[in-house]
Image 1 (cartoon, rainbow, N blue to C red):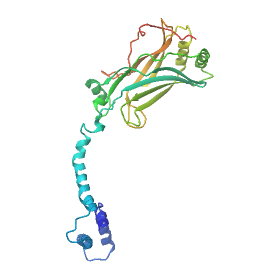
Image 2 (image 1 turned 30 degrees about the vertical axis):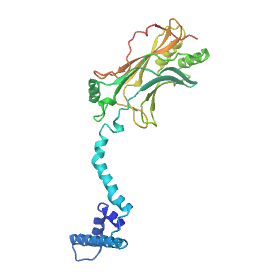
Image 3 (image 1 turned 90 degrees about the vertical axis):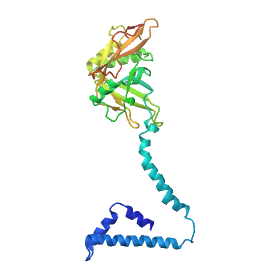
Image 4 (image 1 turned 30 degrees about the horizontal axis):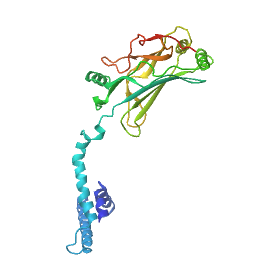
Length: 316
């Protein structure tokens, strides 16, 4: 009886069987009378099953626990879930509605060539991190960078520090090899610069830190400029990298970082030397291009050198 009831609960299964039986059998009934007859037969069969079930029970015997669970408790809980589930999903009590904004961000770059990879700088700290304002969010909506169902509180503006946290330290032979490789564009035609960015959030627990990267081919002029920057006492101050960093990034719960529609960030990379300690480190000046009116979602540092430093090349 229970299996037959489950079969009848399948949408259109009983009706399709009745139609097929009426179409294949010789009968004087029309299709609607055939439906009625099948329904009467099904109802009588269910009643017969109930009578057989009741014959096995004594008069006044309590209903078994499993029948109470499947016929009473579980349907009650199902109705509760249907009535109050949507309210919970869209309420502030739902953990999914709790803010999961970025709490830490880092940035690093390296040069890839046929003879190896060379780390340039790493910036594991930020200058500022905040939620976007209403004006900034409205500009992002107008430019279709965010979707209408995105929350303003989940959009952040993160500005990394304009200087690396570590010193640029490379052995003289490795520095000479890098400069030679950069200058020899005919023998080594392909060299790339790769930017890595990572973000840390409170959740999910399996993917608190999510990472992404962007790789660009160095042009001939960029290679020569970078070689001049690295050459001791060359006097060259900076090298310009176009579209080095994505300006707008979407962080999914799982999977890879998605680069959202919008501008990329051009970067001017400088090698600076501290006047007192005579150690070298990198500085990054980012300029978004093109820019969305009223919105700057990337690091923008002035063209002046970092206080206490002077533009210089590395020393072997």
